[in-house]
Image (cartoon, rainbow, N blue to C red; front, side, top):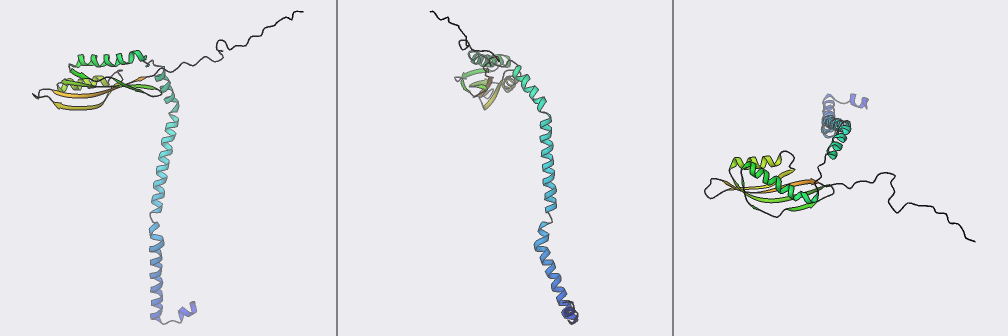
Length: 202
């Protein structure tokens, strides 16, 4: 092959050399150039993976602290007896109404739904008030230990445009009292086994 190339005239050598260079450029453009960004993508994926590992490691490290916080929250007596939940819900609304100076013009019947851990009560109230009084009322309801939050709120001015008429849907979540677990080793009454000996009569 080398001997054949050396026997070619100079012009043909230049043509063969040019065709080879052109073929080399085409092959690189077709197979090599599209993969220039692979190294950058690999570095990016490696950085994302290392960041996730760091986040998971930090969460695992904080697990004992989180468990202590959960136990502390569970130890707080946040459970409200069912017969007092509706009373406490209405009492909190009335207390904040008196403190904020809003006027409740209408209420709907309280609705409740429950899941495994919480009982949720909701009620829609109609309010007539000034802007500051309404803000104070909603803020005070959401602060402290009232467990009440605002889910829906609609506003419109009254006819003289001096006050605001609003419909507010309030929601409160009460922790359900978990059933007490029986002490270990205790035996329910009536299930214990007793051995009695009977003497045979002749």
